[in-house]
Image 1 (cartoon, rainbow, N blue to C red):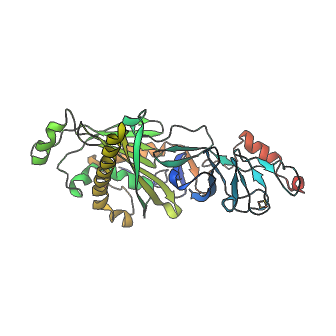
Image 2: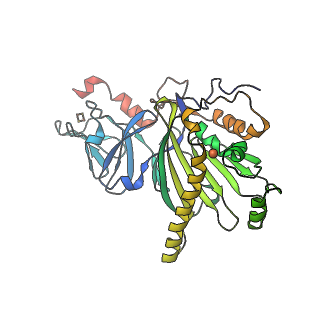
Image 3: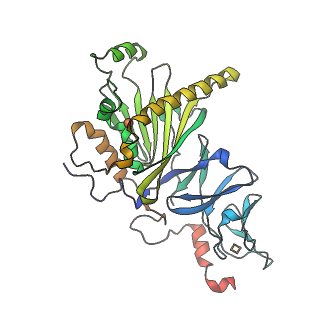
Length: 357
Ligand code: FES
Ligand SMILES: [Fe+2]
């Protein structure tokens, strides 16, 4: 079988799948505040206007390149610290104090959304696709808790396959369960669901079997090759863990776990959920603990895939079929041209130096 080290989207440090990426926790961005965020090699200023709306703009002012996170939020716009030019929430220049009127320039803005306590940025030119969500909770109002934030010495794609590496559950995590996944490709997402009821020779499986009507619930849903949602637990209580990952310099990973549970009514419901989210965190920690060290030293290259690695190969294939963008520039891979979105065309038309003088 072929090695997976050949050139491909998967595990590639210079490109990434177009999609939604986590930027920072919602709670870290109060109304009227701006933060500098580097996302997939591109510098952004992300601020929350008076309306509460989050705006993500390219970091550098179109006058002289000052970082806009040094500036201040005014209404739903941002004013550059250096010479006080102001841009509205579409990135259009609306005030140049020295001229007494705005100049026809703009800065690029990126679509944002808030979900599961996180601010997400759509990195791509096309109309955004769906935000990552836990399949069972698509229409459900949820409580959440942000878990650990971490950096790993390997690519997000590689880190994510840990959750569908069926064989390592036995060797590393000592689970006496043979997991066999069924996969379903959903364009931007792919799901892997366990189809087995476990082994009869294990007392643990026999003990927990009454808690499952059918197969043992364990499923993964991967979004944009970078965010994975885990669903596991007995039929009467499912735990949900999101691994929100993004690539950082050198093809490494910065990640954040998010623990999720459906909202329950009243004060008692609120209290129960605090307990459940804490419990979910312990479940996540158990699985993270066993193989943390492997991801500091691995040089991933699936040279000799076996039958047990089938799901991993399916995930690699899924990632290789996604639309990819280039690290830093966010341009479509193999496409040297800037896109021609109406806003950019406006910018390009008016960006000659002569207009500024
Ligand atoms: S650099 Fe921003 S206004 Fe001059
Ligand atoms: Fe693991």
